[in-house]
Length: 303
Image (cartoon, rainbow, N blue to C red; front, side):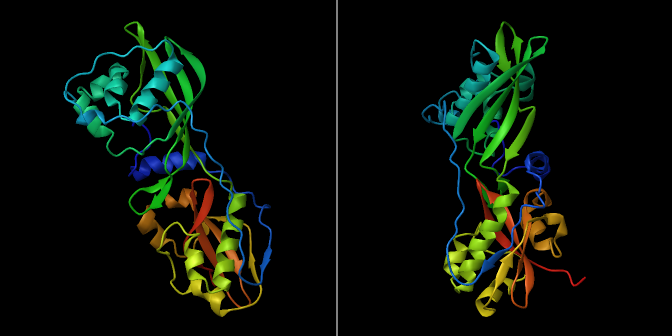
């Protein structure tokens, strides 16, 4: 599927999330008092699934997948982009290949090469086609929203649950054709104002020494950063507060996170300061779909 890579080039993903990250609202964070175990989960918004055809077998598994595909016609730029993306999502790569423009066919002279290039792309679970803007000279740009299975892991880095993308189509040989790559990609990430509530729920479980419950609010089983900080709420009973999120550039020890997720972690991770009766540290969170999940901890500078 010609969209965001499942194991993306980290420089490309840095560009993607750098455009899409919502700015930090400094005045959003409220101080929350925590006294014992309790709940408070994240509210997730579902993605409307539109226009996605039933899945088909990947083109590479069909006879003749290495042969050039026949041209596919579409009546408008929007129709061409919709069919191109739906075909890729459903595994009909011969149809998608038949909609490629000349530059795309030059880059991928055979269906087999086009198919191999899609192997590392993230899965697409929904395609929603938006506005079309004519760009002149028989060209048009179409805005689409794509839904992906969200992930944060050391192999894929960040795969956002939704991306808003602009795809270019052009009239060539009397029909609409689609470029092999989008003009722009913007990740839709949850607002920073939701990060403190995720950390609040995590700290509440730690106050009750419920490490299993806390793990359910993490992006994965492993926590990055100083190993002892996550155990402090269980040992230091009393009032704990959670403050407003900060950018990851304020991290004191970012090395473990950069090593795990690459330098682009600085564009999508957040620090949420927490304060206990005698201890202060920051919780590092990342966006997983429509929610923030805990990645690890970071010490507070002595300065």
